[in-house]
Length: 314
Image (cartoon, rainbow, N blue to C red; front, side, top):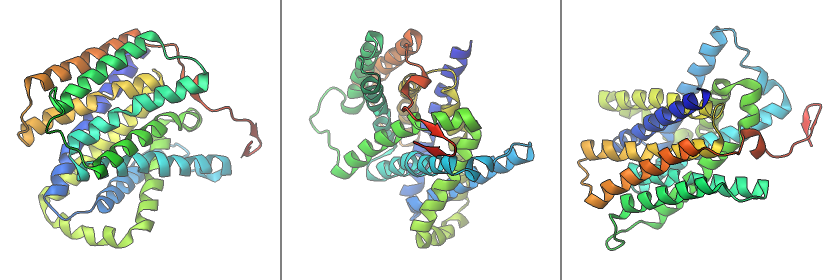
């Protein structure tokens, strides 16, 4: 039952995150709003609201940042996990489109599986390898419609695509100890606050000048929708790892590109070929197969060996 709960959480979270891609693509394409402005507001508003609600419910949200050992991990997660995923994702959208950004993020299972295999010094389960192979075949057809002729991708889009996959892998694996100690929602809240604060410090002018675009009610509504849906998606994603493994969580996130694809078809009137539709179905078969097969990797097994001594990490 818990496994089914974890699968449901990551699938719903992935679909919600996939839905934010086309919205942000539309906002970037129909205004001069910068990535920095969009992210600072999205991260700070969502993070502060999360921590405030938890505080009102009696949760001690300040504890993770009072101790040096936990504060260091919170900052690393916020900088390279939360901000890394959010910024590279939006940069990939700006360099190409929402479909490419979500598809590139889907490559994170490859990095996760490689890391887990190297760390454990053993090959991935056969079922996992087959599922990945089937899913990647579907991904290929979704991207190319079966032919590389006419398929173009800029170097910038490729760079940010690789970056979002790597960042998402770090985001998936790194906060396991933080979540066990302080809870998923507290970690997400602080990660957002840290990420938003860092980005604001680095880009104060772009952030301040961006508020003029919120006079357009469409942009204001779009930003609010992205904040709410995106925050829920992050909470569901991290929360799912309490019930299923990071590898499964990362692989099941392939529902993101499928969601972005469907919304883009309806909203931007993107035409899909027969092989692309077949690719989408193939991806679903691969993902469902992986979720049913499961694997023997536990979240604890992928955590780095860390020796604790008082308030320091050795």
